[in-house]
Image 1: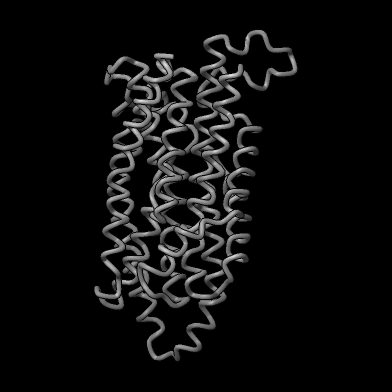
Image 2: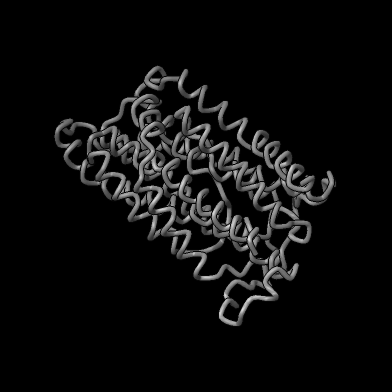
Length: 353
C-alpha cells in the first residue's frame, strides 16, 4: 500500500509539472500578441484545462491498457515510468525547451515495462485490436501520430493563415487587430480546453493502471470496505475520483505558469499579431480535440509548435527562427529514447533493491 501511495504522489507530481510545463502550449501566442497579460492568460488557460480534463477518458484508456502488456506491469514499473517522465520534464523546463510530456510518460512506461519483463520485447504492444475491433498499440496510437500530427499542424496552420489573409485583404491592420484580439480569447480558451482533454488524461491512465495492478496482485485485499474505490478489476475503467483529482491537479499546475517555455514559444520562434495567434491556436486546438476523442495521446507541444511555424511561414520562411526550431526538434527526437532508458534503469534499480 505504501508503494501505491508513492505511485499516486508521483502521478500527481507528473500531472502538476505537466500543467506548468505545457502552459506555454496553451497561452504562448495570446501572451506574445499582448491580447492578455501573462497572469490573466495563465488563469484563463487553467480554467479551460480543468473543463477539458473532465470531458472524456479515451486517451486515459489508451495509456492504461493499450501500449504495454498490463499483466507484466508492477507498482515499481509505474513508479519508474513516472519518475523518468518527471526527470525529463524538469530538465527540459529548466532549459526552456517545449518537449512532450505525453511522449516522456510513454517512453518511461515502455522502458520500465521492458525492464520488468527482463528484456522481453513482446511486453510492448506494437499493433493489435481491442474487443471492438479498434486498432491499439504503439504504432497506431503513438509512433504514427508522432509524425503525422506535427505535419498536419504545419500544413493546416499555413492553409488557415493563407485563407485569412485572402479574406482580410484590404482591411486595415488596426481593424484586423481589434477583431482578432477578441477572437483570440476564444481560440486560447479552445486551446486550453483541448490541452486538458488530451494531456490531463495521461496521468488518469497511469493511475488507473496502478489501481488495476494493485487489485490484481492483492495489494488492496486487506483494506477496509470503505476503501473499495481503490479496486479496479478492468484496466480501462477510469474511476471518477481519478478524473477529478487529475483535472484539478493539472489546472493547479497550469495556474503556476511555465515562464521559461512561454518565452521560447511565444517570443523566440516567430513574431506574431493577434490574427496569427488565432490561426495557430485554432489549428492546434482542433487537432488536439479530434485526436483526444479517438484516444490518441498526441503531443500538445508538437502540434502547437508546428502550427506556429506554419502560420509564421506565410509571412516568409525567414520569419521563423529556425535555430530555435532546431533546438526544439532535438528535444522531440530525444524524448522517447531518453525516458525509455531512464525508465529501464530506474526499474532495474528498484528490482535490485
